[in-house]
Amino acid sequence: MTPPVLAFRAVSRDYRSAGGAVLHALRDASAEVGAGEVVAVTGRSGSGKSTLLHLAAGIDTPTGGEVLLLGRRLGALSDGERTRVRRDHVGLVFQFFHLLPHLSALDNVLVPALVASDAAGPAEARARALLDQVGLAARAGDPVQKLSGGEMQRVALCRALLRRPRLLLADEPTGNLDEETGRAVLDLLLGLARAEGSAVLYVTHSPELAAAADVVWTLHSGLLERTR
Image (tube, rainbow, N blue to C red; front, side, top):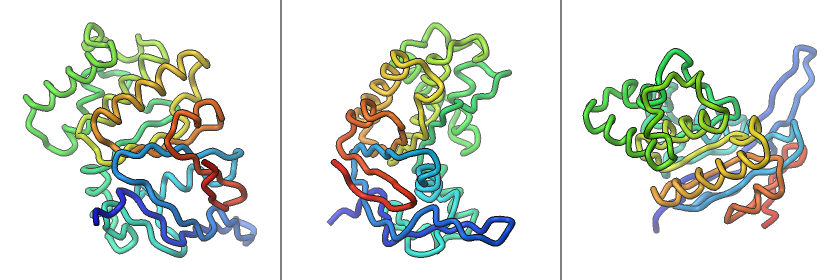
């Protein structure tokens, strides 16, 4: 059997405050994301949603349990190995875009390829094709600071998809956009990811946006449950 793209096995993540108190950000969470599956994560602020994504990306490691990406135990890898796994198999989309303002839209999309030392010609062709799919082919040479918020998030989406990740992680990808633009960006994100065959795990506070997913997980005080 093909392993899930992402699996949490009884995962917990605790943090200790400056005063010594222990915060249980995630408690004994078990869940899976299959190939091509789209999962939305909902929950109140502070419920552990961002912690879940950081663990999925290997940015953070669990206090207990295991996180597996493509069957590999992330906690058993070194920092460098986790960085390489994330670079090669995970795409990240953030609420505040995290684009480089002095670079063009095209060059921002190309950043992951430059970091990975990919061949320049195929990478640029791929970047231009993605920008064309999101309606930004004519803006490829423009500095991103001249783009609207929705356009910047589309550039960020192209950047995340550039190296054809097996898993796309999105942390409140529409949280910095108005409702109409946010819905359009989410539809674009999910449409492109499904066309590429990427599994998706995205965090949203909106029940309406969560309804676009195949599966919905809800977090409450660090406890994870499937609610749809």
